[in-house]
Picture (tube, rainbow, N blue to C red):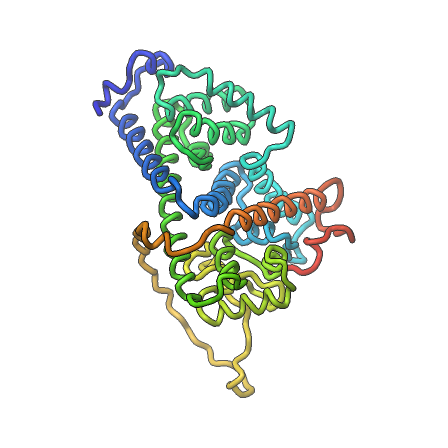
Length: 398
């Protein structure tokens, strides 16, 4: 596409000035459009689409929170979703402890904005949608969304409402068939130049990166799922092990308590299932503790480079001080993107119970959000009341 031809008369009037580098804008627009097309095509009728949406929403929330000054560690976010109370350094000031809880609550509030806004939030989202609808129909959807987002922010409105509106806008303008949460969060970073010539290509490049990361995530999910299902081949179709593998693939991390609630089994039976998958190498443990452990699917958890399994002594070692071993940090090469599964490979599995499992996981997020809001509402955020079930039992961060 000719960069000069891209900036037609309506677009030029909308931007109020001719872009300093039309080719940069054209390249950014083409890259974002191509990345979105690839992701939408891959998601079309994909059996893991709902599981993908669950995971990518959490990643989108982390990106948005970081840009909004509420950076939350992925470990804290996973703990919050599981409904567990975070253990904090006893020497932290009360204000610092409150800040940690505020970041966790902010992240889950952003999740609410894009998944199920309440009555007041829905009103704000609809106003943001109206702002996007006011953009000229002749504008490319990506340019129209960028322009509407910019005008919304400059008018002093809240970012979450427009982000949620953009997700709906992508579907209305037929860029996506599913509510994929692409929001261009990086374009609102503190170091980003707000001048139109600089910001507009930056927004499009941010959208392109989010779409490309989403495609990599989808392919990684289906490959990990494929290998995990193969590792338990031969089980009965009604076996809880199969359902446990599906849930581990759908959720970044999972506790035995959550697994037991979803499967309708006792917690001790859920622990037995997870330990069985752990022994088979299908799952990995991503907690520091021996209690309230969290698990993820092998090769798929985002926390495997952040946390380590709890220390357990070697039963074959005698008493005495352990050897001091020095390990050199060797940088690992970034793995190449996984290829997608073939249609024949995808048809090898039964995904009929997946939607029900995803509904249960969404319920876990809702319950955690309500519990955290109660915890931080109108009192010392480090204080705990007897009624805060789900947050009171055990801390998980050492």
